[in-house]
Each structure stands twice: as C-alpha cells, then as structure tokens.
Image (cartoon, rainbow, N blue to C red; front, side):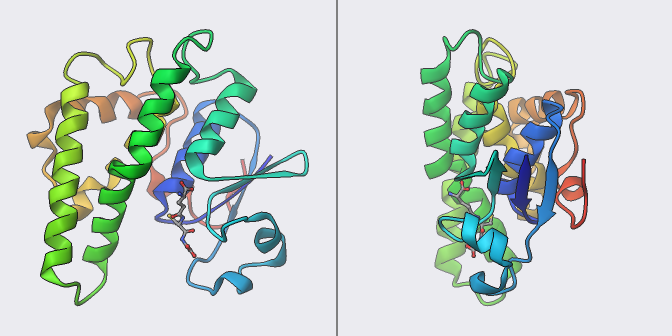
Length: 205
Ligand SMILES: N[C@@H](CCC(=O)N[C@@H](CS)C(=O)NCC(=O)O)C(=O)O
C-alpha cells in the first residue's frame, strides 16, 4: 500500500493517521504541493484523479478523497469501522459533515492566516464558520468520549485531523473543553503520531 501525501495537509493526515493507528503496513511518499500539478511526478499525476493529495494506491488501484479513502480502509481492515457495520450510517453523516463544515472552515482559515493580504471580510467569514463548527463538535462530544458511543472510528480520525493545529489559528482549546479532552483521547491511542511528525518527506513505515 502506498500513500501520497504532503506536509501541512490535514486531508493527507487523516489517511496517514488511519494507517499508523491501525498498524497497516504502507509506504508514504511526500508530494511537493508548491510545484505545479503537472510537475509533481508522473506516477502521482497519473494516479491522482483531481491532482490533490491524498491518494492511496492498493493493488494497482488508486483511491482519492480523504473521507472516501477512510471508508475504503475501514472496510478493508475492519478497524475504526464501528461495531459490525451497525454504525455505518452515523459514520457517513459525520464524514459528510466534516467535508462541508470543519474540513472547510479550519483549513481555509489556517491557510488564509498564513498568507498575506487576505481581506478582513474573508478572515471574519472563515472564523465565524470555524467557531460555529467547533461549537457543534464540542456539543456533540459533551455526551460521550468519541463521536460515536461505540468508541473511536474513522469519524473521529476525520473530524479531528485539522484540530491538532488549532493553535495556529488562535483558537483557545479552553473554550472547547470537550474537544480538548477528545483530542487527548485520540492522541493517547496506540501508535498515534502528531501531523507535524508523520507527513514529512521520505518516511517509510
Ligand atoms: N476533498 C479533498 C481535499 C484534498 C485537498 O484539498 N488537498 C490539498 C492539500 S490539503 C491539495 O492537494 N492541494 C494542492 C492542489 O490542489 O493542487 C479530500 O478530502 O481529499
């Protein structure tokens, strides 16, 4: 199994984290996103339907879109998949929510803050969405340790990915105490690695 990903990409981190947490043997290949898409290597270019990371290759088949990859991996390995598929609908709901909400607001705010001259309106809009999404998540986690009562699933891996960088967008985790303790529980899972440490170039595992 081969994963193409990149530094600072929470979307790549979701898949890398799944592979590490589930102890799935794989190779990781770093893609330089500063290069134009056509210059990111012919193997990656050929495999990446949308030109983005992450892309997972397994048995000569290429898979893209981080949440779709998580669904594939959960089915393939039986790990982080809920109990006997009974939670697949609830997991899908969180994955779709992530794509449109927290996986939109937090990465875009983080990116906007890292680039100069962003219009104030853009920053305000993204921050207001991020706050709304964090409140939603915090509320959901007030009742249970993980997003689903059965324990950690790909819903947690997906929704938490960008939140390990919350310090970069000036969010105080004390304001979101349930998220704070949830991130601690995820980080305490065996084989967990922080995104800054597992998306670097030239790491094989
Ligand atoms: N919806 C996609 C988003 C992937 C995405 O936005 N990838 C970014 C890095 S985080 C990327 O490859 N950007 C470079 C580019 O688009 O050329 C997913 O969930 O995998």
